[in-house]
Image 1 (tube, rainbow, N blue to C red):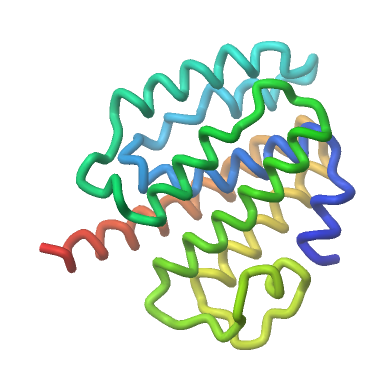
Image 2: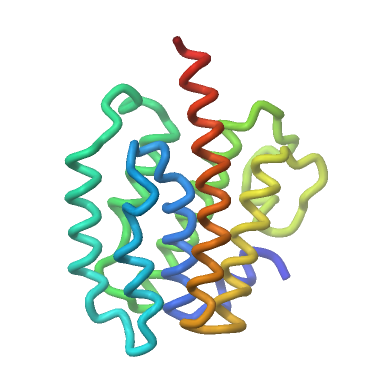
Length: 188
């Protein structure tokens, strides 16, 4: 099943986890620490619901505003990451979350495409999201696999899948942090 199909079929929690995972993997671009989005993950893991999502989201946004990555503020990848966070819905309804998760998916794939040293042969990330993977660059391929895995985990396990989704996300964040570090060394 393609990523586009998985997003179309996901419930509110799956959509929130999908968007949050894309954003979390890009946190190194914001200069944030690995725990920055932990409160939102905790909200998703709560089987009783996401009643405190809006409050936790505001706390996260305040931390990012305070920490910011000023030296990369005009970088396109940083701008895309900031837009993902700014667009995060305070309400966990399926409609808003579906639009956000879809936008985060595209943005995260674009970010990985920009940061990859190997060119991706597709003209856009849309082809990748629809399942056409020939000539895909390694960083984009890995991000696509992570996005699909997160949605499958939540579809198959509900709230119990959040922990495994976070583990998938943590691996991707470490890889992107290494890419960002290597890129920063190249600028010096």
